[in-house]
Length: 214
Ligand code: DX5
Ligand code: ZN
Image (cartoon, protein in one colour):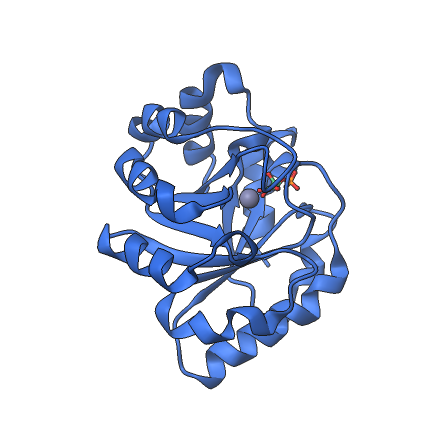
């Protein structure tokens, strides 16, 4: 299992150092949560902060857009140093165009689905994307409880990916920590996002290693 710590739970007053610290602790990717106060009822960071912390690590930046009209902001996040950009299918009026735009910038495109959105919503786009992100909480806040009932959905996406012989990565996000990681077993999930589970752990390196062992 690869682990993408979410900076949403880091100390915002020293984000650059937090990125370097979590890199040293063994993270595989850095997950950055972008919220606009419209698509989700919370506000976080934008391209300015992302480009400011970019020099603190060489790890891939996994940018999770929880914003309306993602297409209009792809250039800004590509310029800021995103390696992967995932956007919500529920927020996009033209997923195909948004995917094409992300790829045209040399960035890996991915689609995210909220808990109430079925697995089948991403099927028409699977051959165009590099990642599917399954939300295991309602997007908007860190520290929520893991929704175990999303695991059949993850397994359904995973089996469709395998059936078609694609190399799309499957990521899960929300409420994943040492207590809940076991529930992802057998679902085909390749990457887990963990915010509080890593940053609030007594020993983040140990927390990352434990999650990676699944
Ligand atoms: C929620 C975000 C998550 C969140 C995960 O909207 O997309 O990435 O930060 O945090 P934890 O691991 O605390 O649920
Ligand atoms: Zn996220």
